[in-house]
Image 1 (tube, helix red, strand yellow):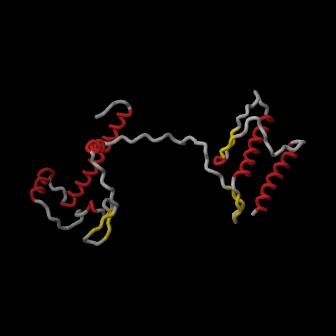
Image 2: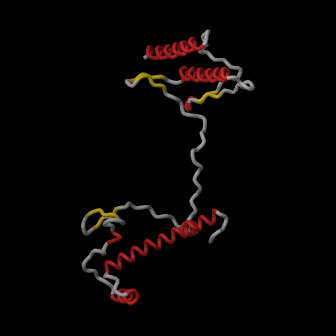
Image 3: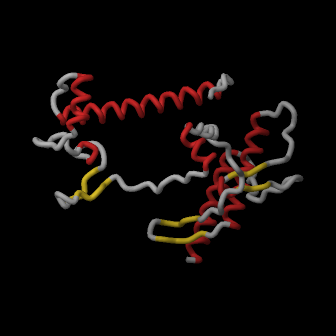
Length: 218
């Protein structure tokens, strides 16, 4: 374990020295000292250099400044972060980041409350606990979905015989004529309920947009 750590440090040091020998006639020290000490955020692999850059710096001066920052960051990582050896190789554990980074997208705006939500909050009505999407059918002794394909909301639509209320059926026939039987009427009621809910949803969204635009709304 100790030999792995020593070999890692020696390899990094030798590589840096070899590169410096090739690029310059004199070796560059791995020890970096600056009038203003560096500050580090190792969790983000970030080094902050508060030392001023000379006016109109040359490319060589910028390269030397960048080299010193990189060397100082490597030194800080090797001296403060725990290094372990595993079957996958030598691993270094970084500390948690300390520099807050900006969000990629803005914070989402709070969703406008619907008329029912405002009424419930005013009257102190609490929301019911959301139940699952499945319900147990006592007749078939199976769990079936509440809505959608083979859902309980379509119960009775495919039955070949259905008990009906004569007065309600007479009113429907007087208003719409023969609509195709009980199953068709049940489907029509379900579709109309869906459309009614969609209209309410669009009205709530329109009311919210008008309020955002400053148009008010009831």
